Amino acid sequence: MNVKQEHIEVIDSRPRRDEPVSHQPNGVAWGSDAIADVVRALGIPYVLLNPGASFRGLHDSLVNHLGNADPQMILVLHEEHAVAIAHGFAKVTGQPLAAILHSNVGLMHGSMAIFNAWADRTPVIVLGATGPVDAARRRPWIDWLHTAADQGALVRQFVKWDAQPASVPAAQEALLRAYQIANTAPRGPVYVCFDAALQESRLNRKPDVPETSRYAPPSPVVPTAQSVQRATRLLSEAKRVVILAGRVSRSERAWQERVKLAEALGARVVTDLKLGAAFPTAHPLHAGPSGMFLSPASAEVLRSADVVLSLDWLDLAGTLKQAWGEEHAACQVIQISVDHHIHNGWSMDHQALPPADVFFPCEPDTVVPLLLEALEGAATLGQNAAPAVEGVHPLAVSASDGDGPLMVKDVAAILRRVTQGERVSLLRLPLSWSGEMWDLDSPLDFLGYDGGGGIGSGPGMIVGSALALKGTDRLPIGIIGDGDFLMGVSAFWTAAHARIPLLAVVVNNRSFFNDELHQERVAKERERPVENRWIGQRIDDPAPDLAMMARAQGLTAFGPVTSASELEQVLTQAIQALKTGASVVVEAIVAPGYAPAMSQGMTRSHGDE
Image (cartoon, rainbow, N blue to C red; front, side):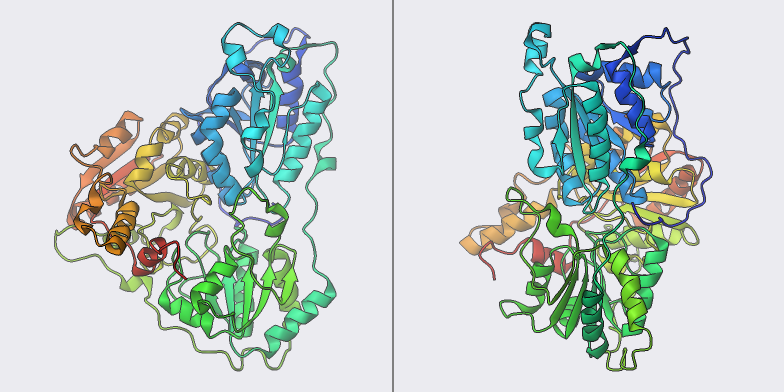
């Protein structure tokens, strides 16, 4: 990243490391040694992998040539988890990790997680292997199965760049280029595939390690003076500015600059639960609770705007449509985004095309301080700004009385109570969450969703984010649904094995409830029985014991918990265990339910306007 992340005090940041037996080098160098040298030179701290014969040469080099240090190898039980953990790590640090995926089959396993990182604009260095490409060198049966003529084609439509180098110097250059491209905005995953025979080729002389600083990502693009002047004029003359705070960094400095800009303009600020924290939600200018879709209050605020300032807002056109419907947005739009550089014709993750009266092809963190500087002293700033919305303050949302069925809001209220005074990082939140349940006061308070909506990513991303926060003064806590947990539960074994402290609270409604709502919508439209919506959706009879599944991964686990009084006791114990370095899961049985804006947004008919 080109911005400094939020300062966090580091105490003991390294996970448990498997120590290899030491040996004296015999002077022989191998192709994979030269590849491993560049991985180290790039400063990649960890390599996530599930072992495979296609990269056995590189595996050996990481262990016996580099000593399993810088980078340190971290074992996972599924390739999807390797990419998801790297994704979660980068959401905190902005720094990519390497994930090694075995041949074509491992790449297919990891492909959903790669798509998530792509859609989340998050850098991950995905390494792979194939072959031997030379058919004469393949073992019978298995090498033929695991060799592809163009393996990168499996993921080419949702990585920024891929390569299959045919020599050691080309492999070193490919790694340099991959790292540079992954870390250039808009950031995203890259894929480099190494021929198995190339890795295991004996070298007459090991090549020198390139000076990686000479291949660093470029500096952020700076806007033209004319664009800044045009935007400044629109903002200074506006009566009702609305800022859509979207994809921004975890930089504390940039956070404070966004607050200063909103205060200077008297602008209302809308935030999005699909993305990481971008603005303090208790600030009087925050326009109401965040969600996956606009709430009615936020839509009303947006519709009142005469100028909208989009800070790389996710789905700007769709959001304007939520406020104005089929009418053209009756406001001037200032768009700050580099996302157009990554759009292609295969994936529609670019969303609809938004209007823009001023378009900065830059990152928000670069433009905001320039706007602040240009706006200083403008006499009209904020004079006509509308008053702040009287929304629901998170602290006003309390747990239900008694020991009746738990709601997700009860889990939030109790968790907030038992962590009072602590610095909590919410690593992940479920679809049933709503913004009024928790205040966000700094960039690391919440890290956002998974980007691509690929269920099962939650556990791996929680582990990766917790790895990035290990040794800091933050409590790494993720809240996920039972479907997400069940699909990705074995990712938590890596947390236990590598001694990565975390707390995952599973809000278990024993259903793929999102699809129950879809089935209800279809049944109503077709005048068929709504009562059948649960069939093919409920995770019951038998109900999986999620706490037991967590214990099977080596975690400390509590549950199932069914009442508010029990949950407070359990969460208090869980927090204490987390503080001692444990990886912890709490299973809470909750009643199904979504916020109204979420239910409406998720179940619109495909033909709805």
